[in-house]
Structures are given as C-alpha cells and as structure tokens.
Amino acid sequence: MNVRVQQPASSALHTASYYAASSAAQPDYPALQGETSCDVCVVGGGFSGLNTAIELAERGMRVVVLEAHKIGWGASGRNGGQLIRGVGHGLDQFAPIIGSDGVRQLKLMGLEAVDIVRQRIEQHAIDCDLTWGYCDLANKPSDLEGFAADAEELRALGYRHELRLLQPEEMHRVVGSDRYVGGLIDRGSGHLHPLNLALGEARVAESLGVRLFEQSTVTRIDYGSQVRVHTGQGSVRASTLVLGCNAYLNGLNAELSGKVLPAGSYIIATEPLSEAMARQLLPQNMAVCDQRVALDYYRLSADRRLLFGGACHYSGRDPKDIAAYMRPKMLKVFPQLANVRIDYQWGGMIGIGANRLPQIGRLHDQPNVYYAQAYSGHGLNATHLAGKLLAEAISGQHSGRFDLFAQVPHITFPGGKHLRSPLLALGMLWHRFKELI
Image (tube, rainbow, N blue to C red; front, side, top):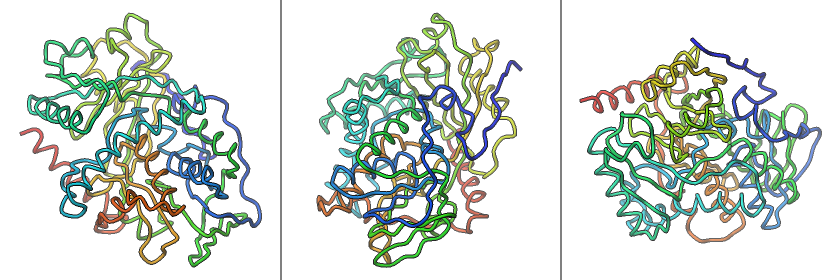
C-alpha cells in the first residue's frame, strides 16, 4: 500500500495530523503555576472553551482557560473541517418539551451558528482557508426526498443562501463518483482549517485579556458558591465554572460524563493532487457528506489533498492502522486514487449524546457550573453557538435561548464507562442493519 504516514505525537503536542503539519505558528501558553482567581474559569481549550471565553471577555469578565494539552488539541483541532448549518438531529422530537416555537428557535439558532463562525473569522481576519460550498449526498432516493423537504423548510425559515437539489445525472458537477443518486447544494455552508481557526481564536481571546494555560490538567474541583479548580501545580478560584471538555471530560464530573459517549472518528489525507485530479474529484471544491449511519465525509485542502473521513467507532477501540482501515473506503468512492499516496492518518474522539442534541446547560445542584458537550460530529458551528449562549446566561442576558437547550433532558448511558460503548455499538449495528434492508 502506498502510504507515508507521519508518526503519532506525544500528548504534549498536537496529534500528527495534516492540520498540525500545516498550521500557523503554535504559541506555547504557560502551565498554571500557583493560585489565581477570576470571574469565570473555563475548562477546555477547544472551540467551546475559546468561544465562551471570547464572549465573556467581550462582556467585561475576567476569564481563565485551562487546557490539559495544547489549545485545540482535541476534536476542535483535528475534525473534518466541515462548517455545516444546523444543530442536532430530528429537532421536531423536542416539541412536547419546548413547544413548536421553541423548536423553530433551535432551527434558527442552527443557522445563526454558522454566521457566528463567519463573523468571528471576518472580524479578526483569521486565516483558516474558509471556503463556501457544501453538498449533502443522497445514497438512496428517499434521501433526495428528504433533501427536498429540508430545502423547503430552510427557505421557510428565511435562509438566504442558495440551495439547489441535484438529480442523479447532475452529480458529476459536484463529485467525481457514481455512488450517489442526488444531492443538495448549500452555499451557506462550507469548510476550513479547524486548527488554524482554533489558534486564531486563542489569539483573539488573549487580546481580550483571557488568560490561557496549557498542559494544565484539572485534577479536582471543589464546588460551592466559589469554585476552586485544581491542577497538578496550581488552582483557580472563580465565581463561575464552565466545563467544555466534550469527549475528553474523562470522568471529571460523573453526572456529565455519563451523558456523553466518546466515539472515534478517523481521517486520512492524500498527497497533494494535480489540479486536474482535484477538479475531477470535487469540481466545485465543496465539502460533502453522505447519509449513511457509517457516513463518509470529505473535501479538498488548500493544497489540493483529499481529506477523507468517517468510520465512527462506538466500540472504544481504534483501528490499529487507520490508513489501512480508511483507504478501502476512499477507493470505493474514488477508485481513480488507487495509486495515490496517503501522507497523513489520524483520529480522535467526538462526543455523542443519546438524542443527538448538543447538551448546553448547568448542573442542577451547582447553579454556578455550566457545561456544553455532545455535539455528535457537528461541533464546528455548534460550539460557537454554545459559547454565545453560555455567555448570555452567565452575564445575565435572559433571552431564553440558553433555557431552550437547558430544559431538554438527556439520559445517562447505561452500564457505566465500561459498558456504554459496547451497548451503543450494538445499537448502531442495528441501525446499519435497518439501513441495509
């Protein structure tokens, strides 16, 4: 197999991804030493934590961010880079809890979430290869029927960007593969370099006075009217705490850990392709995603590599060789890449919730402890929305938007940490079986 894969990095560095190899300068923020205090302590230096910190700092609050590894080390710095409208799946199911108007507001916030990212990038001139254009790919005719309904609903919500249904004979205008029976183009979604976005947002936060600490794993939290957050070499005293660790919460809070399942997702990156080959694969340089349970998602990088991802694992075990596992999936879509070298392979954990709605709220018994997690693979935009909603709630802006998320109940996965993954893996196998028949 034609593979030249970078070796894994230590946990003190970023995973050996294409993003880490092509990123902007990665500053080293200090580890927390000694005691300090602030208005809000944020645990997690990914998109959730960074954007919560930015929003709070813009509202005049003193913020400290604690990251166990490097800023953007988790899913924020290694994801597929697809910026897609919407939050959650099947939002109408929540109408009995938040009402039909509440559901409509969630749908509108799913559109606003992309605008938050757009505005953050434009306002602060963050260089992250932002490219507009996305296409949902239909694997079967019923998918295309669903796309038509989606487009109609989006227009009814006032979505101002171009939406266009594609019939089977039009698919080669978007993707050079015969696997799909239709699609839905969305010019209001797109793709970008996620690690560069995270690094840019860290610079924005720092410019606003946010104190950022790396290599500062939280070891214990003392709850109360004032929280005290302990790391190996220091502590932070704060009036308010935000937990934004998602799939990397690692038991830090038992209540929240039980409601999010860490699931592995994987990406390979080819060598740079010729302009002709890149145009053949994705003629309009769109990000794309199919509709299967074990979905494929892919796009081109700025230097014309194909970044091909998917294969979500609920078993808790990563493939021994990601490239060997993912390459056959890529070749089913693009057999013309049989002789193309794979330069990078990497994976990471995404946070899955049982109902696929992002979990944004605060602890019932600790009203000064807020959280955001379980983005179910659509975190690039949802994290930015979460940061805004958390800041609105913490700063006392009672818009009710935070409450719409907070009042939706989220079940705890049964079986504890050792049985959660196998049980969900069985459930996903059942969904894949139904998909096949």
